Length: 317
Image (cartoon, rainbow, N blue to C red; front, side, top):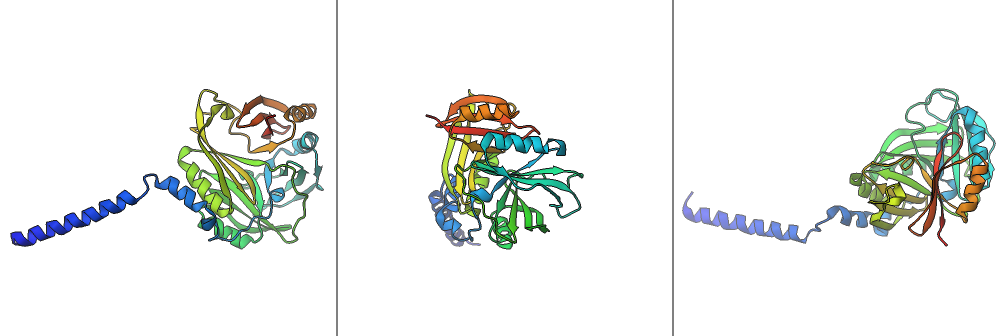
């Protein structure tokens, strides 16, 4: 190779490198955050079908011991009002099992209660919620396309079909579809699914679920008050999402959480926190964290008979 050809090759390499540097310079420095905004945008959501029905059909799943079943459901209705569906014993898993099952419908959110009389097949009772969808096959396909693992593939139950998916951060969620569409009253207030994940998983969970649900990231606070997670001297990241499935609050923490923070699955909005806590305590509910103020809310954490932990909040006056 002569010196002329060598000089030409070096000039071409330098020019190519300059083009590459220019392209990289034009790329966003925080690609993850840019992608978060992009995939949660209406345009991104429009690329997948909407399959949510409504927040009154999206239930928190609560598993309690059979001997605690009635005490728990009675205390929940006494706290929030509402009514219970007819109780029965069913197989709700793809492999043999038997569980007591009942819906509790309240103005502030619906719960599905299970009291297994047999050993519980994996991974049931690890799912946080059950979300009603308009089409099970479309919902599972969309969940997979948006980064969810299908940990229990679609299976029949006595009144429809179900599947369990797992979102980034290890968030298990049941999707369900009914042969005959249910008809529940609209909620007075929409509860929030409270999801604790690592800082590394928070953005991916938020953007993927927002796109899947055709939802909107309504706030992303990098330094939210630590009192909300039991650490008043610290801060953490809080992301709020709203969609046809209801509300989700993503709490990104280092996992150093004082009890009972991280144990609550759902936050219920009420009109009067003090009055609700008084009703709850009269029904045998224990106040674990007394009321505190943050983010325009008065909030407390409670434990119902049977062990279910919940957050209850009201707008600060």
